[in-house]
Image (cartoon, helix red, strand yellow):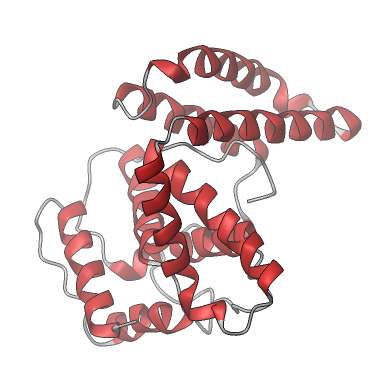
Length: 243
């Protein structure tokens, strides 16, 4: 991976997210981003982390100042953790960075712990609605989206009072809904796109492939393909506490 090119791409994307305001990735910020590149954080993963920070920032109301890459650190590491779990690479890829508390005070104190179940459901509903409104999901998704959205709304209404076995059943149901939506997405992808997604998945895994057994690589490739299919349709991960 070309570290300088990786940092330039991050800088370009960050400037775009800041409505053209120039935010340089230099000095300590360059070292931070270079560490992600060295650790094998895929570009799509880093960009998703930046998007996640901006989603939360926009919800606070009118923006007050440009966002620096350091502010996005916790979200990028969260998404990288999700990617590692999805691909089974947790043992091969230690979390980059030396101190989770470093960086901006704008990062949420509990970012590394992941969202609560109510917060997770809220984010899933918002992202599912945005994906549908933005045209990422076509007619083949209409029936399943209506049903999933209805179940998620019902879950949000009762989740704060759900405990024990009932909570576990809800989590299992979320996992089933997640797989159903993902299968629908896979079925909607044509052969040429499927080939390109497979190529991108192998490119993401290239830094780690040398130390992987064939069966481990196959599982990692399948997980990476799933994430890229989600990204293509802008699908949220409905499953909780898994990815």
